[in-house]
Amino acid sequence: MSAFYAERMTVIGVGLIGGSLALALKKAGFVGEVIGCGRGKPNLEAALKLGIIDRYERDPQKAVEGADIVFLATPVCTLASMVAEIAPALKPGAILTDGGSVKGEVLREINPAVPEGVHFVAGHPIAGTENSGAEAAFATLYQGKRCILTPDSQTDVRALEAVTAMWQAAGSEVVCMPAEKHDRVLAAISHLPHMVAYSLVNAVGSYDHYEENILEYSAGGFRDFTRIASSDPTMWRDIALTNQSALLEMMEQFETFFAELKEDVRQGNVDRLFEFFVRSKQLRDDIL
Amino acid sequence: MSAFYAERMTVIGVGLIGGSLALALKKAGFVGEVIGCGRGKPNLEAALKLGIIDRYERDPQKAVEGADIVFLATPVCTLASMVAEIAPALKPGAILTDGGSVKGEVLREINPAVPEGVHFVAGHPIAGTENSGAEAAFATLYQGKRCILTPDSQTDVRALEAVTAMWQAAGSEVVCMPAEKHDRVLAAISHLPHMVAYSLVNAVGSYDHYEENILEYSAGGFRDFTRIASSDPTMWRDIALTNQSALLEMMEQFETFFAELKEDVRQGNVDRLFEFFVRSKQLRDDIL
Image 1 (cartoon, helix red, strand yellow):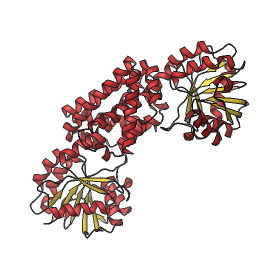
Image 2 (cartoon, rainbow over the protein chains, first blue to last red; image 1 turned 90 degrees about the vertical axis):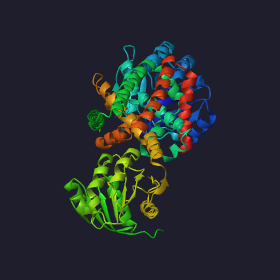
Image 3 (tube, rainbow over the protein chains, first blue to last red; image 1 turned 120 degrees about the vertical axis):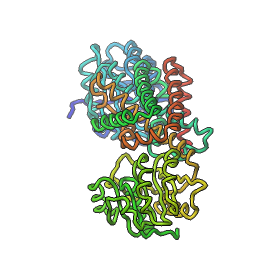
Image 4 (cartoon, chains in turn purple, orange; image 1 turned 90 degrees about the horizontal axis):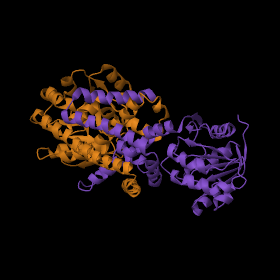
């Protein structure tokens, strides 16, 4: 459906996010050669064997040489320094884009590092699993998922079209919104749930220290939480640090509701408890 | 493997829990006739059509006539009054057991209502889905799942053996523990997670009122929460009311951890955030 085609694409950070995009774009015929780059050689070797990349370079500057599109899929805290590092080696007219989970604060650091003549488009695919590394990548990860792009008044229109076409080729529905709105939406639907799951697993796990083997009994509900809470600690530390203000706002919103519920449990408020649970069920039915 | 066989079994409350047990026991050849009872006629008709029960009676006293085993699968708040209602009709030597999610406070109400010569064994299968009603029942629900029995010094040993054999026939692993420990374990691994999920969905859903369509973007993590938070409101209201003290203790435990995490986010404590997330991942790896 698109007229876009990238002769050469570089993926920096060939894990679940970067690797899956490479696989999807190859399958869709959107890219020619894919060059991988990243800190771990064993991971790059695995990516090569799995056909995710065609070759790799350990040096980021070498990796981006001649690339039409460079996709950054390294942890959000490393993005700005990575852009600064590859800046001198990017070819004029190259499109630079990312998959970072936080936008506002991160973009304030990235934007000044983007060299003249290179077009940066900030993005974030709303997809993932709790697994990481090249071996976790698969071509259909983005099928039917949303990808949020956060262009601003400086964003090149042609580059925005190309990145939109790229995500569409990977099977995603592309949505544009301001970076600040992105960060509030993600704080609500992703970052807060992770903080809640991490706290829950730690709270129950600690309780287990004096009440033996509680975790042995863990049933359905608890297992769902532990799955979320086993996501990559480095990535979540970085998200908590960079999306601090939106996340704190949502954490406080949650605390208010949880405290209200606790008070109703304490007082045995039959009707209020029922209403609280019904409201939640209705909210769910509305989105399904 | 067991020498136990129930000529006639009555299931009061033919939903996911009661219906699945009936199906499993029929398949295992543990029961002859299964009689259903419950408030909703359409549900009982459905159970009949699905082969879950062989016949039904609307009147609980009629339903338990001549039954060797009576399984109570109605909401926890109704158990004691149901026992009082059927008490005069239970045959001498009948075994009465339940599947209620809360034990301590509920048993203090049930025990005095059990008539002389009838053997009550309190139980709770740790299994379920977010669906309810006879149509949600399936024979393998209990396969490989734990079932907790909470006998006390008054419990008849033969009856305990029979109920153990019943759950084993349904595919469960049977574990015995005091009622108070059961309530603490369940508060931790099931009741608290549900309170957390209900609060989260309500908090995010309310936030959505002024930030349009946030729920539209809900990705993996949030969807897992909404699944848990769509469980039956009546059941969860009753659990919150009857397991109040253990639940409040766990809610406070959770609040402490969540507040600690929030403080680390506010202060940008890089190392403490990382440790918090790593600890959670390790706890999960320990139970898998």
